[in-house]
Image 1: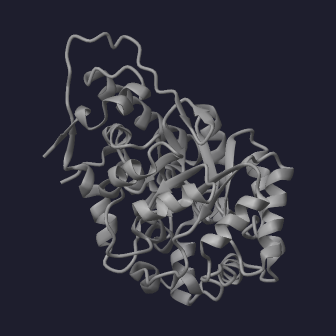
Image 2: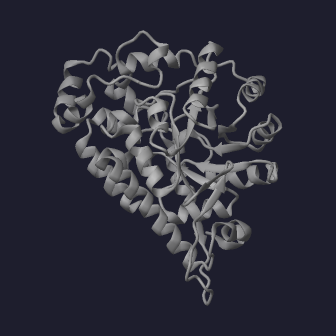
Image 3: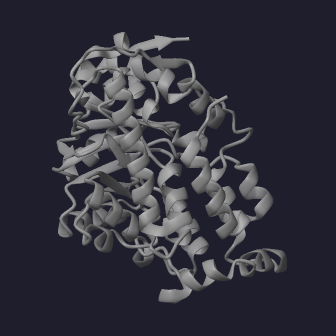
Length: 380
């Protein structure tokens, strides 16, 4: 049994505030949701070994990853439609990220356009897809450059969108024409509705120029249809030629793909199974991390995504080969529960717990954790 503490508390608060179909969209996974469960259970198989009589009067969480320096080894993963969960939206999350000195990815399907998210001054990276119409991809790259974004994250594990049973039950993909029952469910949360409509009817601002649809789900459907299922390693090389900033590949789950990403000129990878929202069943990201880290041998930086909930999880991932970790649901539940302060609170919990675990393990900084490696851990 994995106790997710403060994460569960914020999720419960958010569920009371959100219509069920949005809460289930955040919480759900693909098919039987076994991958999602496996991500969490994998952490329960590891402990961090305590060490006594070491000077831990000052614990330094400063992290360097993807050529960036953060105050905490935690990155806010790009999450689509975050602006639908609270009116602070992606900009609120970016303000929280900046205040805590961490980075953030802005999704292609961000309600706020990347330009407005970048304008917060946060360390923002743009998540992109290689689209069938390469001109659209080039335009997104040009927009990123123009607003000062220096890093992109290419998501590679979404050649198709699998069945997500909660979304099917709730009719999530058909919200452009909501049923009477769906409308009743939405209107039963007046505070959420009022916040959502503060700026008028929401649109997916980051892709608004690429579609003629005038509602969120219609816009998302139009651009999702542009995601190219023929994407291969030659396309990654094409992207490398068209982007001279930091290039990170997200969705790597095996050593072979990690090595090929390095060979193609990627600066980093995110070991991710999309939080259990794509392949089911797939291995837990923590289980494949050591093999991937060994295969790339320091040629690029590695971020671990999927399943991080506690500070002990952060330390475990670093000891197994990650340079930093990426969180999705924890920050989104924080946003949905309390706006930008909720995101900051989620980061504060992770920071404090990470600091606690490192101190009790006698590890004074992030490099000490990584240098100790599996010697810092106990396998149950």
